[in-house]
Length: 177
Ligand SMILES: [Zn+2]
Image (cartoon, rainbow, N blue to C red; front, top):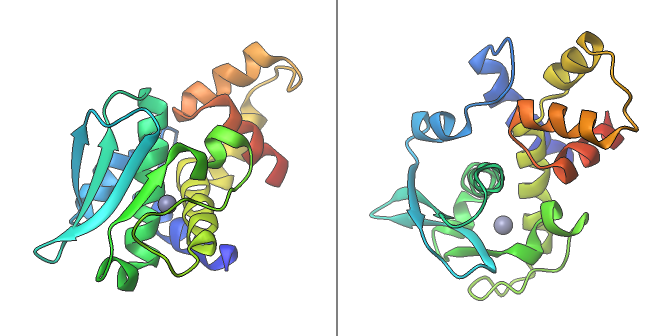
């Protein structure tokens, strides 16, 4: 199931033909007809995805760090691309604890509106987001061009910053590549 999610993200990102990071995730979402709305939510709320008059909307917590907002947009875009049928009947709300970016792994979400066991949805949306923001091709390219020590946190942070993702998200991706 995650592999399907990753494949969908790969298709979208390859279409952009990027030579270098970062992946322009906001632009990509807009090009897919998604409206992004920034709101000062409570800190524990990262974002949400829903339909308004049939149009997909992503709500993002404007108080969070820009890199985290990018992850939220990518994650919610995953819901819109992969889980459209769920959006027809529910608002998907993402609390921070759903996100691997926070905890390093997936938790069963305390999803208020989608009662039908949505954990697989979160795993898929996270896999989609990781693949979208950190395409294997670009990560490998950046690694091959640079000569730093991957055990050096400062160096890893500088690489993560090139992709505009958190250190945690970058490290998780390195483990997969
Ligand atoms: Zn989610």
